[in-house]
Length: 237
Image 1 (tube, rainbow, N blue to C red):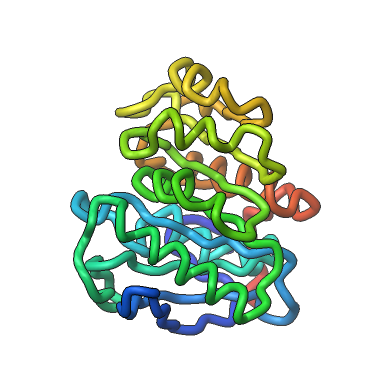
Image 2 (image 1 turned 135 degrees about the horizontal axis):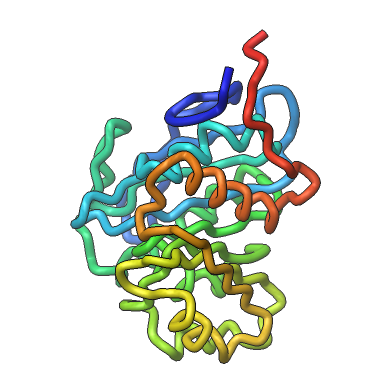
């Protein structure tokens, strides 16, 4: 079977709930390797919910569908406050990236309670703003930023990562709607260890199997490079 589109490879999948410090319940899913412990954990932060982003936004759904099997990764997806997906609706209301600080904290508290190893924040668009603003407050190995717009995350939020031991990887589409590679290099220049990866032909929404595979490959290259190259075929038996 060719691995493409919405295929779900073998994994242990569990519907979960996260409890925030301000008293909300958020809905999500944890996907784990089917027959072994994960070597690292992706905590995913979805695009802007007021523009259709949710835990099933396609790159995050495909990461959960493929990477537990292909790269021995745990993948946690959840709806931030007020966001709806087929999994359900998280309590609360969208707060423009402010009270969502509690949502990030709830996800990482869950990771700690489950003793999931080597957590990374993987943000896409709006999710990158949350990762940049709040990731430094938590015990993570690093952040991976997919199409960061750098709207809500200020220059000060970016510069605060300078001197951090945690990794910062930014995937910038060549034809992004908000931040293109040359601009991104300037915006992330204050962080000596930031890796800005320009993706030829890429667009903000990473549409198409070629772009999906590139994004998932770059995620695994940062988190578990021993799993590369990612398989493109799967034996269902």
